[in-house]
Picture (cartoon, rainbow, N blue to C red):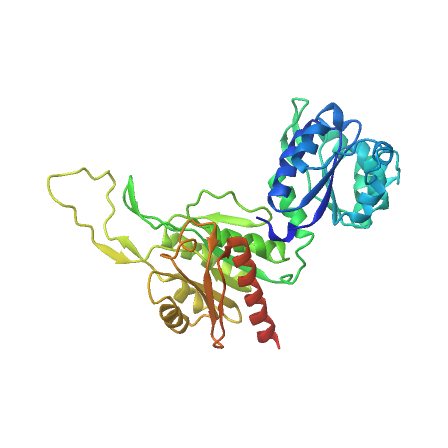
Length: 403
C-alpha cells in the first residue's frame, strides 16, 4: 500500500489512446492504496474503453460530457476541479496536451485541468514521431513551466507496429509518482544506500544456504525514501519483488558480493540502512558438481562470511548507519548488544516468531533503539508504515547531527 494516497481524491483523466485500457489497472492500484478515484474520459477515450468499466471500478460515474452531470443534478466537472487533491492524466495524447497547454475547456477533462489548482501529473502515450515533434515538446515545456509533473513515456513496441519512444509508463510507475505528490521532501539531499533480502551461499550447483527473508522490508524502505525526496541505491539479494522505480538496483547472490556492492556505493551515500539478512556462514568447500546422495551422512564445514556492518563502519564518517536485528528470543537484549557491538546509530529489532512480524509477512512489529538511549515500540503495521517510521527516526538523527 502507498500510504500517502490514503483518503486522497484523485481525478483520473483518460484520453483517446490505445493505452487507455491501462488506466483501468491504474484505477485499481489507486483504489488499493485507499484513494478515491473520479474518472473523466474524453470523447476519444470512449472509443477505446467503456465509461461503465471505470464507473464500476471507481464506484462513481465516469464523467464524459460537459452537461450530463448538471442535467442529472450530480456534482459537475467544475466542482470536481475544486475537490481534487490531484489531477492525473494517463494516458495523455498529443491532442490533449495541446488543448490543455492552450487553455481550452471544450470537454470535462480540459475544463477540470483549467479550473483545478491541484497538482497535475501527466503520463503521455503516442507515436514516437508525435512525441518528438517540436509542437508536442513545446506544449510539454509549457505545462511543466506551469508546474505540471511528467511521467516520461517509455521506449518499446508501439501500436503501429514500430518501435520507439511513446509507450505509456507502466501503471505501477505512475501510481508511485502520484504518491510522491503527497509525500513531501524531508529526505531531499539524503543519499541513502539500502540493502534488502537474503543472500545465498552455495555448496554445489543445486544447493545453497540461505534464510526466509523476502526483502519486503528493505524494498519498502527504499520506496519510501525515494518518495520522500532522497536519492536511493538498493543492493538486493535474491527476491521475487519488482525493482522499485527511480533508483539504481544492484542484484547480488552472496554475502561477499553484497559487501563488495556496498563498498562500491558507500562513498556516494550519506546514510546506510542495512535491512538485508545476509548469511552468516558459507561452506568452506564448494563442489563443482551436484553432490549425490550416498549411503552415509554428509558433513559440510562452514566458515564465517564477512561482517558487512563492521567492515562498512570503518568508513562511516558522518553517515547515519541503521542495523536490523531479527531475533527469536530476548529481542531487546540482543538489539542493545548489537547497537553497542556494531557501533551503529540505531537498530530496528523484531521477533521472527511473533505472528505478523516474521519473514515474508506484509506487516511487521518493530522496536527502534538508538545510541542516545531512545526506545520506540511500534504496533503491528504494514511494512510501508514501518518504513515511514524508520525514516522519521533517521531524519531526527540527521537533524540532531547537523545541530
